[in-house]
Each structure stands twice: as structure tokens, then as C-alpha cells.
Length: 166
Image (cartoon, rainbow, N blue to C red):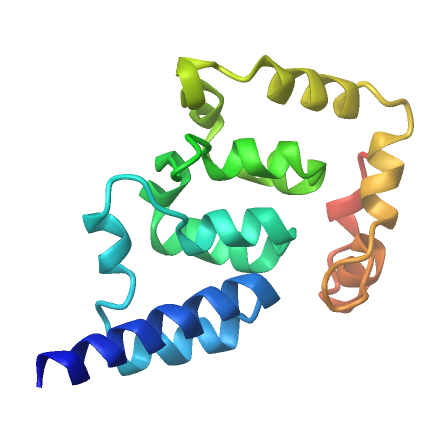
């Protein structure tokens, strides 16, 4: 009986990690609907790759932002290598994801990782990105996960004023 329960938990964790790796938000919510405590296991382990760590590794922005809304504490959790999701995003070169993490919680830059390193490289990447002269143009023309640009989304939602300062 205990083995059956353990096998079910292992399967749930596998499905959750697969959803994070592929950025599948629908699968995430299907898992939550089946088991409202599916994310609780990650709270109980001190050093672990949470679904947010996995999404940061893979560059799955939409999934990561959804996870940040559901479990903001995951953003401060370190994995077995001593890295937070922000550290991983920067290490993998996912600048947009790193910026989105900081938009949601700018104190994440203070999370100390491996060897209590504040990861000044995170700050350096962000400064280089922000100081690019065409940064805003780049963001407006950037295509989201559904293939839309900010201009297209603005037009679709009839909100042209949202792009006025660009």
C-alpha cells in the first residue's frame, strides 16, 4: 500500500517536472486540480530543483511566471548546486526571464547562492541588457510564446495607449 502511494507521488513529480521542462501551464493546472498539494513536496525539501528551477533552466517564461504567482517562495529556494531560479536563468542566458523575475520581486537579487555569492554577474547581465539603446524597441518587437508582439497584443486588446512611451 505504501509502495503504491510512493509510486503515485513519483509519477506526479515526473509529470510536474515534465510540465515545467516543456512550459505546459495547462498540465500544471491539471495536476493541481487532481492534487491540491502537488507542490507541497518541494516546500518540505531544503535544497531541491523546484518546477520554477526547471522552467528557468529551459527558458519557459510563461510557466515560470505562473509558478511565481502560485509559489513565490520557490524563487528564493536553492537547488542542490546552491542556485536560485534567477541564478539559473542568468547562467543559461535567459535575460528576459531574469528581468521578469526581478519585475515580480526585485529583492531576488539579494538571494545568496553557492558560497554565499551574491552573483554580481546577474546584475552585470541586467545592466548590459537595460543599457542597450534599442532595448525598448527589442521588447516591443519580441514575440511571445503565442507568436504575438506587444504591438499586436495592444491592437488585439484595443489598448494603443499601452505602447505610447515606446
